[in-house]
Image (cartoon, rainbow, N blue to C red; front, side):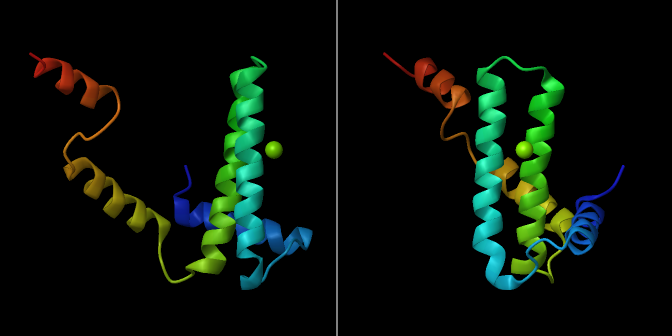
Length: 109
Ligand SMILES: [Mg+2]
């Protein structure tokens, strides 16, 4: 299985081979495309499409995020940043979501 860094390199290879937009000024466009792919994933979910179809749209999101990443922050390794962010989020107290509601209910009355 490839790491995020390796996936980023594969996306760069795809961009160069297919002659997609490939300049730093194109970062906002790539982020827009990531949002469009998120919409496609949501639409696939809404239509009850098979999970493989939803997964393909979600991978498209990751492609565009990594494509934006390599142009916006080329000196940062996404695996390292993922790990740092994961640790940061894990260390935070529960502040929202179902877990928070459960805590709120626990201390009611
Ligand atoms: Mg798509």
